[in-house]
Amino acid sequence: MSSADWKNYKPVLIPEIKDLHKIDVYEKNGGYEALKQVLTDKKKFDGPKSVIDEVKAANIRGRGGAGFNAGLKWSFMPPADGGPRYLACNGDESEPGTFKDRKIFEYNPHIFIEGALIAAYAMQITSIYVYIRGEYIDYVKMMEKAVQDAYDKGYIGKDILGSGFNVEFHVTYGAGAYICGEETSMLESIEGKRGYPRVKPPFPAQKGLWGRPTTINNIETLSCVPLVIKNGASWFSEIGAKNHPGPILYGISGHVNRPGVYELPSGVPVHDLINEVAGGMRNGKKLKAIIPGGSSTPVLRADQLEGVSMDSDSLREAGSMLGTAGLVVMDEDTDMVDVLWRIAHFYHHESCGQCTPCRDGTGWLEKILLKIKNGDGEVKDLDLLLDITTQMEGRTICALADAAAWPVRHTITRFRDEFEARCKKSVHAMA
Amino acid sequence: MAYEFTKEDLEQIEKIKAKFPEVKPATLPVLWVAQNRFGHVEPEVQRLVAETLGLPEAHVHGVATFYTQYYKEKMGKYVLDVCTCLSCQLCGGYDILHHIEDKLGIKAGETTEDGMFSVQQVECLGACGYAPMLQVTNGKYVNHLTKEKVDNLIKALKEGKEPDYEQMEMPLRKV
Ligand SMILES: Cc1cc2nc3c(=O)[nH]c(=O)nc-3n(C[C@H](O)[C@H](O)[C@H](O)COP(=O)(O)O)c2cc1C
Ligand code: SF4
Image (cartoon, rainbow over all chains, first blue to last red; front, side, top):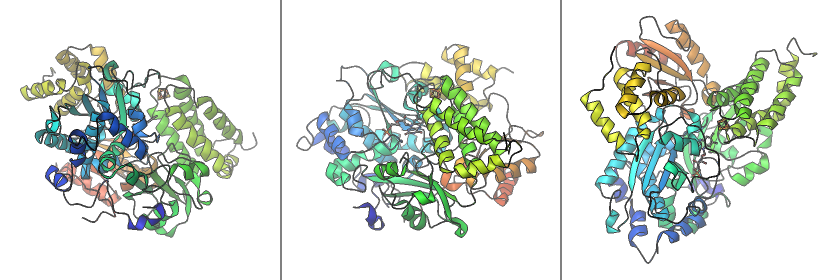
């Protein structure tokens, strides 16, 4: 299935089956077959390593934003030593523009549970925790029910399907903190603490939850796993974009006629997503800019989008990133100064405050942008902002500081005229 | 006022503790049990959580103050968390916030005198495609807000009618 042929794509992550969230319906449609194959079909899968190899070959790139090959990440787990090992599933979903994992919780929770169980077998994990953002309390309840149903059917627990494999599965949730989506902050939060990201190394594969080997994956990433097991790595890697293959849950929001979450192959052209999938621009307005994959991914002007598609290579060439594939669409009336100030406010509010460049840097970014927004800015403030971003990047414990710096740098650079015009209108214009 | 957990709460707390290899991880979920019971987690409630779990009060306080969804003081009966973050901002989230402020005669961060409503401005709630939107007291999401929809919501809440779960379909999914 090529990206260009997206019109003929049939959803596989969230297929069009009524009541699929019910375990009986999921089973009737081939659900938990992949888990059975992995645990009991010794001809097809000869032990955990063969599962990791298959997933690695499929090249499922992490859907949490960083795009790391899931199978490769799994292979970093140290050999099992008989002690506890953990899988922490990241359902924190808090990056502005991102609202896709909730569709899996609602419409196909068992594909995620099955994927997590297969991951657990492959890495000889003893306990799985899924961490869902606290605001998603309705989805927490849906997941609690789905997990209980899977326990009752014997897919979770002791001696699963007579294979001798044991694993626990727990649903946990947060209480409002974007930073808890950062993987080590999430581990702290699961451990019952303030969500301060940890200094790395040691990496979670060495010392994760309670000091034990732990792997962290996004919900959508894990949901791809049963598809790979059932259909094979090459089937998966032939869907969509070559270097970032597979189905993608695109979350489209902003000034389009039909916002929402759409499952399509990776690599759909940005113009197709806006004009055909999402029904075009609202009120017949012209496109001004997009943010392709959540608020931290650099903004692209409409004139930078010719031939650009939602795949990591294409977006990198254009000067941005795929991130979470949460596409935010902005029309010609959008005030980029307001938008950037609001993004800066978000990151300042969410900085955990451990690192000075992040705590102070996000504060300054917001403050100076507010000044410009309020009409008190000076042109030299723009260079000050750019200077602050360079002092934030790559100097902190976690990537929140980078996530805060990128949009500022790129929005100012790409909309310099608009920012300068706002500054020149102010009373300080000559300064 | 002395706060106490009910028998059911204590049973629930035992179940929570069984999920983890030690006690500390029960902090967040038990703060939730407390907030669901008392409506907030004031310092007195934090003390109860600490005592129930046998953890230092400073630890529980540290956790309660890190996470925005825990109410560290008494709030209105209904808390309206209005999202004004990126996609909601683009789709009129601030107009909705200001409409609510005008209608209730309070500013974000305040509670009406009759104790019915608190209004807060919040960061992205993960409903970007359904902007502008708000969440009612850490519970239901109310999506695709218009001034009229807000008016109806406030009227219904005054009558004690809380909103239902709104299923937001995937537009191309035909089932
Ligand atoms: C500030 C920050 C916030 C993050 N928020 C999330 C999130 O909400 N959900 C998520 O899956 N990953 C989030 N991530 C990425 C995680 O740290 C981690 O890379 C990811 O969960 C790994 O899963 P994957 O490899 O399957 O994508 C965030 C990272 C940072 C730096
Ligand atoms: S970069 Fe920011 S959010 Fe991350 S640990 Fe440092 S202060 Fe906290």
